[in-house]
Image 1 (cartoon, rainbow, N blue to C red):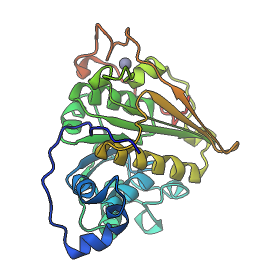
Image 2 (image 1 turned 120 degrees about the vertical axis):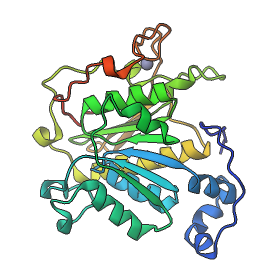
Image 3 (image 1 turned 90 degrees about the vertical axis):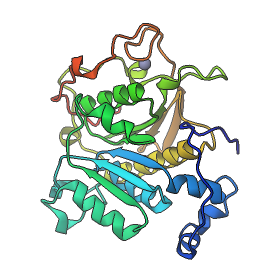
Length: 292
Ligand SMILES: [Zn+2]
């Protein structure tokens, strides 16, 4: 297993683990790639999760279980009965409750050693850069293109890595973005979301509400997103940066394709025009869970 420096340059102090922590994280502590140093790094990490929905549910559960010390959650929605087919953080009793509150309660039950920071708001051009700057890494599990592009732009400008996933019908996609690092020393590409998919698509894209999504697909992709987030925090294994993972649930097949940085990209290219998000139009009405 290769190791690479973690993205954030943080120095994590040695830590005395309590007996409870040694018991809770025993299966991590015996992994040479994690061990005490890695677990201490996770406990010292701050991750922002955008969306406490289908992807955010497994993502938040596994990050909390892993002992990621501080989890920020951005969501402005309440729990609806139609969410429960895939949003396994929430239950029947939470219908009508703010998702950030429902999520915070469930995560506290799972691991009281994790601090949860609920942000009951919609990520917008006015708050995105400041909010993502408070965290070491961001995971986007949102269900619309406006938020997905905004998260990409804010993370690039704030210099934060972004693990982003999307699901629709039976298809999932996942990648890690760290375009703020430019081209890697090893010649690796670090494209952003705009390099991969161009500008925000126009209206008329179908949403999950229109075309449906297999509930368990959210579990698959959200859990993969948690794996990649932990790898980025620890600097272990091979990053998905520069690669796009595609999952076809009906075919039971995974495919990974190379993703190249675009020198003409308006965000991360050689002559960027996107420098101030308040000047960018993110169309809020182009809802789609899309795997394009
Ligand atoms: Zn780009």
